[in-house]
Length: 260
Image (cartoon, rainbow, N blue to C red; front, side, top):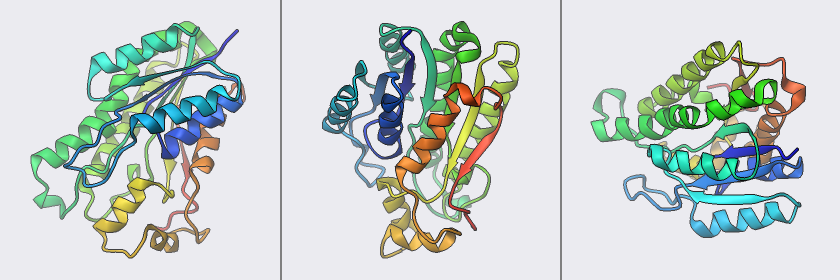
């Protein structure tokens, strides 16, 4: 039977690495990404060409792939993505990976639009995917998996990034409660908490702190280096596997020993 997984924020970075890892394990994929820039963010997002290239790479591994432009703030977009996934077969896994760095500044100075953008994507995007996909996961029973890629910011307060940290805390709390609500279904729900990973978003974070490059974040890791997206994807790959059937309601830190 074909196993189908949904991945949001898939066009590049951690999301693309997750898609490639799942394709390598034989998962059919429904890949979504917003595929348009938001000028207010100050950095480029994944584009349609990125998503198409990823899909081709996954198809080269022998799995069916569909793609959808998907803004996780829009319920109809998420419904379309899940429907596209269901057309491939029973949906057994969903990975809420889409995220943004909405804005920065001292916590008490952040304008409403910055707080709202972070909450809308980083928290409500997770909630929205759960609303759309959990009924399908319940049908999958003990094979059902929900994973949210959160952040080390989900368990600590980052300076100048209060709205981002708050949204990630909220996402973590939601998934923990989701796991409890799913306890009789056999479906598991977990979070992965990446640390400083070599992505475009980390480069944007470096700009917040006036760092010369994102590589400067390596000093906050016990490994003394940035993580590769593939290292985060490996954790997701395991959590959606049958080997992780006994793990739910937890958060798996893939942060290189983040020291704050």
